[in-house]
Length: 132
Image (cartoon, rainbow, N blue to C red):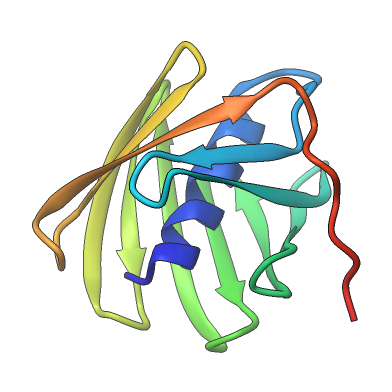
């Protein structure tokens, strides 16, 4: 899984688990940098933009399962939620992932990289970059 896709996923998980989220950015401890996101999760549909990558993940939710497509790779991404725990498959890398959200932190274990990655949601918005 690419770094940008992993960040995108961490943001989506946080948006799903935090009601009325006051954040639009995610801090990546690996790159030591904040990343801005925007979009909507409304009803059973989602469309989330990663400003840096200039790419959307769009998808549909049924119960605790999300079926999504990353528009940069046009590959599917599955996400299964079980409370604050989650897991799924990234079709682009054909690799599984799992993770947990606790407080304002999201941790993802990437089976392809055989490593944990850590993120924090930021309640103070960073300046949104312009797209285009």
